[in-house]
Length: 52
Image (cartoon, rainbow, N blue to C red):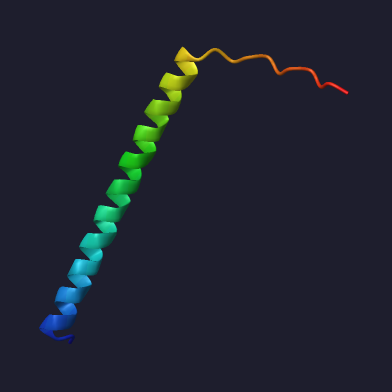
């Protein structure tokens, strides 16, 4: 059975992983909103032809 220090470390590590995963989800959601807003407000331009 691990001691109280190891149990505390394990719990803090678990909480850090949960927090990190939540931050990633928020960042991805915010980026998706920004990209959707940008795609809706900026019309796609046609590519320019190459010049020789």
